[in-house]
Length: 231
Image (cartoon, rainbow, N blue to C red; front, side, top):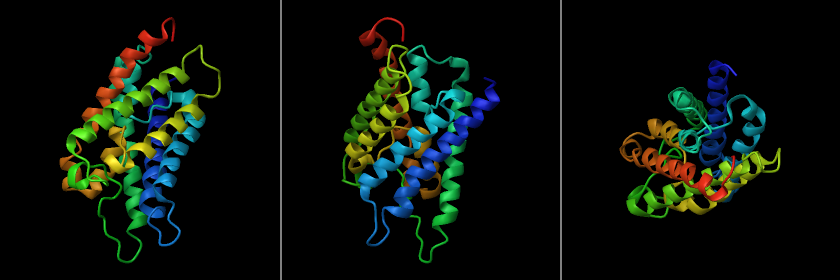
């Protein structure tokens, strides 16, 4: 598949992930009397990945996340020469989604940017969790996310069900970690909203690049050693 088509698929897929997931948090979760809560936000993130994995997985592999690209590279499933183009597409898709979400959200009287679904730790963690807690959570949860991805897409796994397993895994990850960091496990997802939240969100963005990439690379290294054989 030409890189230009894969670039487009990654852009659109990441756009949908950020717009659908963060949009549910910014627009729906806080709606007076009808909010979907963090369980609804968790499901929204899972559904974005599930739907787009079916839509464009055959085009780009449906990464939508720099940590996924790094993890697949570490696991020998993805060529290093394509890492930078994929990451650029993912980050641009996330920024575009955040911009569209901002344009919609700011159309309501009294709108304030606030956290704008950004990720944070310490005073900016939804539950007041420390930097260390956030670092551990993001590494471990990204590791598990990539482990599921690598297993579900293993050539020995049942065919056609990978997007379901991956989408449900991302839902579970959000159910666990929204109180800790507002859940990243995806540097692109963190970057888009942070650019609009500004200030503290940009200052803390480093963690939501470093931790997910570490977790993804670790999973890419561990999975083949656990599963054995071709993967």
